[in-house]
Length: 103
Image (cartoon, rainbow, N blue to C red; front, side, top):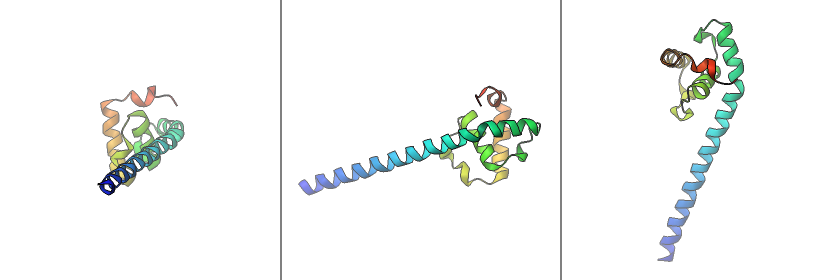
């Protein structure tokens, strides 16, 4: 009986640890994307809104920080054309989000 209780407690502990590690990784990624956001916004403005002129991480920073797209959506695995389309569609639905987000 004690043994099964210990197994349950161990599994719960591992689950909490895994959840905490994933949360920490997500927060770190959002922080890194927030750091490159000002340069991404400046580049987008300089290129007159041509999204394809941005690098993948710049596009991801705008999606995650300005439009609150969760990095859990696996944005890092998408190819650039898919990210470009995603950002264009998102910008069309809410064009002011890029402008009002603090740099």
